[in-house]
Every structure is written in structure tokens, then in C-alpha cells.
Image (cartoon, rainbow, N blue to C red; front, side, top):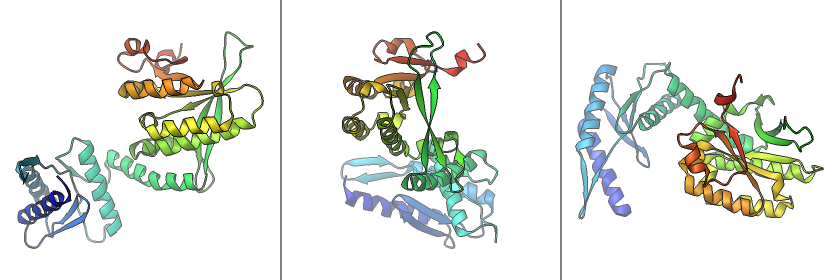
Length: 309
């Protein structure tokens, strides 16, 4: 309905918050659609009761604009502040994390921050990793490893290698991907990382003798990113590398979740000569039903099926 309607919603919502709290409390708009409420000298039990009442009031509220009616929701994080306990930035960070936890849990609810909450601790870790990852990309501290894929039945067949990602931290220690990939996925950094991996792999292949084939993992986020597909095709064209030396790996879960986009991604790059591998095969619910229409060259069976064979 336009910016004017949005501004009016913010004004009405501010009034709703202001009417709910005491005169001694502070209400502020932090930016965008984020608000902060400071409940002065309010114990945790009363604060929880008050905020749950606020959520109910927001749930019943309708924003009317011209001939439209809108429901409004709020995800709220509650943090207890004790004298000298932590800094302002730590309090705001804790509130931010609790808000996201409320949103992840289904929205329109309250999440109370506890310092020993494993979920919130993990989110804190992820949020810290976002800044570290961006800096690592800017400083070119990502690095590639290669794991051989050895044909056991045909010792003379060409050996493929799967490209794996690592990171040099600020102390130049190698960090494994399970430490930072969850944060990259949660905060949508995977397309940027996938671009770096593809670019670095092609640079490496230019100086590689023979016909060794390298496999690159592609995230579900990049699979849905038309800009990434355009970027990949342009980069492959300019590299001078024979496309059939390049194999893209996508997980079964990502392929199922974005089936039409996955099929378009695969068909576009296969037309250039690239190969495709379906990773974690068997972990989805309808593997064989969609496999007929998924034009991949290799299946990588989910480890759970072959472990301890």
C-alpha cells in the first residue's frame, strides 16, 4: 500500500506499545520494524506476564488502510538486566538473539533469554561467525582441500577429487567447515562462498596437468540464485577449462526443496558439458520418484546406509 501506509502503521503500532506499558517505562523504535521496551524496576515474572499480554493485544489488532485490513504480529525477546551484570552491547545482542529465536519458533511469541540456553548460544556463535566470515573472504583466508574419489573396481580409471572448503582463522589455524558453514547458511552467505570456491577451483585447474575431474559442492541457496547460475556460466566460459572436468554436487534435500530450479540449474550447466552429482542420496522421502527427471551423472549414497558395511 505504499510508504504512507507503512508510516501510519508504525505510528499506530508505537501508540499501541505506549498504551500498554507504564508511564515510567521507555518505548523506542530501534529502526525498520524493530522496537525496544525498557521495563523499569520490573521483576522477570511481571515482565513475562506483561509481554504475553502485549502479544495478545497485538494479535487482536487490525491495521486498516483504505479498503484493506491487515493482521500484525510481533516476535519478542525478553532479557533480564541486573546491575553491573553486562554491558549495553551485550544486553542488546542478547535481546536481538532472543527475538530471532522467537521468530524461528513460529513468530508471534515470546522467547526469554537465558545465558545457558544452548540454542541461543549457538545463534550467538553463528552471529559472531558472520563478521569473521566476511572478513575472511575479504582477506582471502578461505582455502581448498581435495579428497580423492577412488574407483575400487577399476584401478586404472581416472581418479576424481572432491573439493572441500577450509578457513584460516585470525591465528592462521585451519578451521573445518562444520564450524562456519551453519552460520553461512543461516545468514545467506553461501552464494558468496560458493562463488569464491568456483573461482578458486577454476584458477587451480588452469595449472593442473592431465584430465583430473574436480567436484564442487553447491549450496541450496546458490541453486535458487539466478545470478549465481549466470556467474558460473560466465566464469566457466572465460576459464578455458574443458567443462567435463567439472562436476557440481548438490544434496538431495536441496534438489527436492527447489526441484524446478534445480532442474533448470542442472540442464543449463550440463548443456555446457559439466557433470552433476546428487549427494546424500536416500536421505529424502521420495528419492526414486523424482530421480527419473533429475539428470545427474553420479549418485552419492547417504553415509547412513553404507556406514560399517
